[in-house]
Image (cartoon, rainbow, N blue to C red):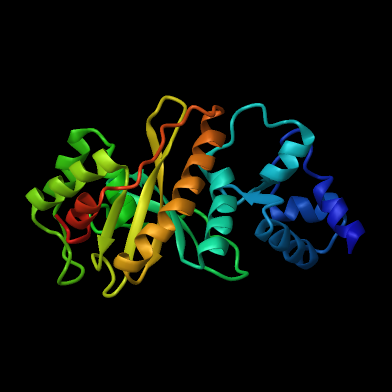
Length: 260
């Protein structure tokens, strides 16, 4: 087994990318064996799937090989951060980025299953998720207005659909760098999210935890959530000068929690 895995990994030199058929041919393996092993290696992030279905070396291998001169991307590092966060908090962890007025996201549930990958099919609304509100709060005003003009769909009886209430919640998020969404997308499920910053101080992404009760869960989870976001921000920006993420004052947390 070790020799077969080694033969597969040895096909990826100098940043090369290969299809499954090419990997099987270069490694001298049956396609079925190559498929099984490359799938396992991809699940452990030693290999990555490209958008056109090719395989390439994953971040750990590129780092070992010294070929990763540029800072890692969100897609490179986010799964590891989410895995640690889900393990520590025992909560569902998500990371979202803004994509065409929606949240494209990856997710890690507590347990052994690996984090998901970004997919065009995995999107969530901006206004009804905590991570979406973080992304909106730090986006240009035009993006906020386009989201409102597109329509604030109601997913539960608690979903904020009034533009004035959404704008108020975004203002609190800009001030506190914390967003919550109480029963906005799923009945009985709340979310709390914080921003991930890039080198220029722009918000690149948002990390969110799903909880049942904001009253009891918010404060204990803000610590590990903020640490995860700051850690990822440092990795993506290549600097330690990341703005601190303050804990939301009690009154402002209440305003956001009730959807204002």
